[in-house]
Image 1: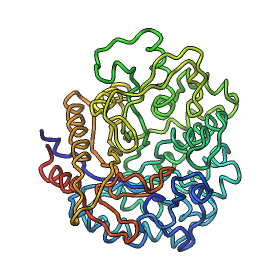
Image 2: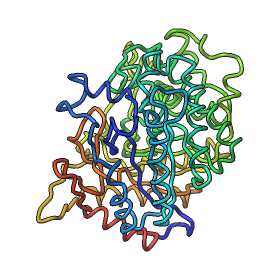
Image 3: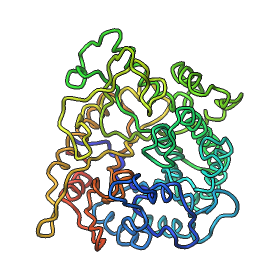
Length: 456
């Protein structure tokens, strides 16, 4: 099972999850600093203050990447390191870290994939409304331009946003992520302003000479319970309507504006019922519709729904009235997420059909399991099986015509897993949080061998 000759193999991380050093070299405070230090928000009271200490150990981590034969490394830039207050002059010490990181990656023959926003909004901007404030989109474009001015001569691949659905609806809708707000109108407004920030930044980056631009979404196939194990199952009319609506809220809400310059009717109706649509100003959709080269796809599990007459909208899903969110009949990871590998091939094929103008890259895919170190090894057979199953579906999607350019495993390192703290381990490299020692798991060695032979 061989992949295309130019297929890109790599791994991904995010700044707040691995860097630590939250008060060093002029870094400002982020919403995740604030949120994680507030009692009750994160499991076990964990914070990202130290995390994996990648800020100081990035050289060793790059050596690990080289040994694993990674061709690409996706990381995010911490906005508060670059502009501690979210605007104004750049902090040269913050930029210097990423400058050195990029140089050492290139020296190891690893392509840097830069994500500009992976949820660590400067707290100073949140104090002025965060993503509910239209001005934040313009501040984001300024920040993106400043980062590109420093790194753009060596970085080809740029992602503006990571998972804007999560940032908007878990951060401002049900409050389980930073900044912890719980208001549907704030979530809808934030989603639009995130997209506006994407469009403004993409245009600035393109004008500055950026070669490849990407928007990263947490897309999933939306299925009825019967369809999880039987793709040929035909849903009832009511269930099909629930599937259609949730797909619009999860995926089309972000990709339709970015690729086509339009919002689905279901999204406009949800906004109208939750605060109104006044925040969508004339000309916004034209700005959001900045040409991109790739859609980054973060896939973990399908979204399972069915008709639920009379049910109110879920707090994270404005517009989901009369929909029941169901469970899949499948094994689960330590996160409780169902393992449905062919959900990935179904998703990739559909995205290529719906958005043929852009290529695709799997920018995150992986699983948390309860890993244990024994005699200096981590025998994570469950993760190997998970990755093997999903990569076979990636190959199937390519054979079915999906324009897929690469695969980045989530994650290189065990790390701070947002509201779950350090309880959940997604890494192919084990991190001892007491000593910060790194130990490649069996899955890392297996993945290295996949990369070497470019196949399974």
